[in-house]
Length: 506
Length: 60
Image (cartoon, rainbow over all chains, first blue to last red; front, top):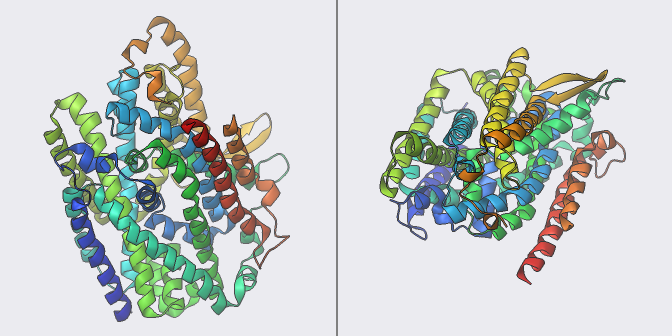
């Protein structure tokens, strides 16, 4: 089934943002031969541009498809996205203005670079940098899947449109750098807010109000299961999933790039109070999963093919096609597709910054600023091509599983990054050992789950404590780093390698 | 130490046994859903208060 009006509106909006992407390089133009200009927008984004950029960066197309799909399939558990995106902001407020300050003082453009300056340890920086690049690859791939779902919902077959979209993405990322996603994110966020506001007014009106929608949800899915005696049950699972996901989020290279591109510490602090607006939007969006249940789209023959092909991920596209006039479905789908382009571009740029500053420069050959910018631009293309190949060659379930593992891995950089802006107690090698223990134990536990589940039932003093594996293993990681730092500081202190001073952090 | 105002954000957002219930419902939303949506502006407000106080101290 094809939808002509929706497709026309969709294509017009996509073309508009592509033109915007190419023009963005001229906005407050800097010297694109400088990697700080290309990869960090010259650190000059104010409160509002940062708000749009970080909103577009953190609340992605994948989220817009996957969270409602989780609500649609698993019920209340999917709502963990709300506490998750509440508890990230105190972390943003406390940790990242300090990181911005020290990065600005020393010209760091990545998180690992800060660690190299702090500990004089390029191996620790390499471990953290590689973790970031590897965790980012499936994340970009999932953005592609999000885009593919809406293109498929429009009835356009094949991978052709997706390949074209990402070739264009690679091109404007190359020419405009971080300014392209910054500018496009303004369009994307306005479209997403418009779509969500219209959806929560129009769809409940069609379905007889929110009470009628919630009444259609089976009781077992409406709330979390009450735990049995002696177990934390779904309660600890839900809370640790929210907290662990929050600790991981800002460690992703694309999130770090978004933060470091701010023009001051004040911009970041203000955004810790302003960005939650997106969390409200995400919560309402999650409820679209329940609306899809209430509307009965999964048994509607019009959407049978879509559900067969995309599974629960088709819930939102089906609901959009079912509830909206065709032209507005085009707007909603464009919002989701542009919601894939923005973070994908930032992810490619962020990975490229890491490759250039933390792998190529310290391990291959030191290079001037011009060469660095060129290396970064070329690597951003490699990242995009890698993600496209990933999608074309590897089944999408693997991308989801790798994304799950990516979250487990990236959180292992939390002790190094977050603790190091407060204290120089740790030893660089101890942090590296903690990272290795964390990566190994998390991967092992996820493999015992068959790479499917992210929750593990730990047994503590006769009590069963189901917890998000990432959170449990990062606690182990931090403990190893503390215990090893004590003897290492005594016999092989690396404090002399610290090029930062206390004033760099306040 | 105005920063301690950030600690309640974690309590209100993660006290799952407290909010895992249907009643009292509001505008058709079960408690589980409207309460958690409400934690978003509540958390933002706490962060804003901390920001205002610290920002004023810094510019003094």
